[in-house]
Image 1 (cartoon, rainbow, N blue to C red):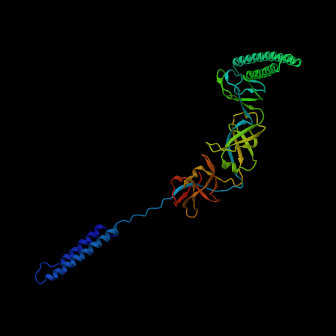
Image 2: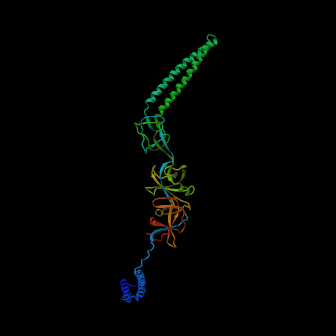
Image 3: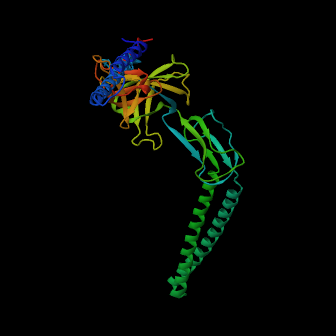
Amino acid sequence: MISTRRYSRFVLLALGAHSRKLPVRATSSNTRSMTRNGAFVSISLAALTLLMVALLAACRPSEPETAEEIRPVRSTTVQHGGEGEIVSVTGRLQAQEEVSLAFRIGGRMIERPVAVGDRVEAGQVIAKLDPDDELSALQSARAAVAAASARLTQTRNAYDRQATLLRRGFTTRALYDEATFAWRTAQADADAAQAQAETSENQLRFTELIADSAGVVVARGAEPGEVVGSGQMIVQIARQGGRDAVFDVPASLIRMVPGNPEIEVSLTAEPEIKTIGRVREVAPQADPVTGTFQVRVGLSDPPEPMRLGATLTGRVQLGAAGGVSIPASALTRADRQPAVWIVDPASGRVSLRNVELARHDIATALVTQGLENGDVVVTAGVQALRPDQKVRLLEAP
């Protein structure tokens, strides 16, 4: 490679040589010769200029080509197992039957001797209303019964007399008919008064709220001194009997669970306390907010520490076609659908592939479609990738 200084020296020498060839003085006899020499000099200078540009370009150091970026990523290889994975869901313990007790009439509650957690027996008084109004109504109804009974006796005697006189011919048919009508009216009034008295007696009984079965109080809806309405929940009782583990389960998981599965249920806080249950009921309609279905699992012989309201963890093994579990960090989106980056082992380049998810949480995602055995899925560094980018797989930490 020729340096710029040496090249400049070479150009100056060349120009000096050409200048020495030019005539010293111009005469009429050599004018045409000078013109030809001048043109020759101009052409030579142009050629030298081109040569100088070419040599300068050759002397300029060439720019190195930009190397393709190879991004390091972590990955996992898809392996479909022979059996489905074990899925865990969280729920709560409830009684198989829970009933809300309420007064049939409204009034001011003066007493509620039970509290949450108390055990009650069938026939036990749960709460009471102020009975003053009902007692007054009952007394009035009983007085009306007495008055109606007196009128009934009076009209019946009058009817009997008119009937006897009519047979003997000492009265008219009109008087007899009038006595008959009065007697029948009095009989109807007496029946109505008796019915009203029975209603008043029932109203008085309704001022006491009585448990219809044994159980445990799990909730209360009013306190003594409040004015409550008919049908308002006063206490909620979990009846004695079976216990259910209640879970909110997505529809995709319900479809993958085999028929009549055996479910292991344990206390979330104490996993060693566990029992076995089977699905007893699946809600026919999804929750409008969460989109999940309520599943009730009947527990067989739950241990004593499993109390009502306790947080439970249920585990069930999915079928063989349950899907494959991958880290949730591998998920991205393509065409508004879940996707993952797949690494081509031959070229080391990545491409996006859409997948279908059964479920996912903060740690893992269960893929049901879109992945095959042996696929290499990028699990870390997905945000910085682009299609057909070359990557370098890092070793597992």
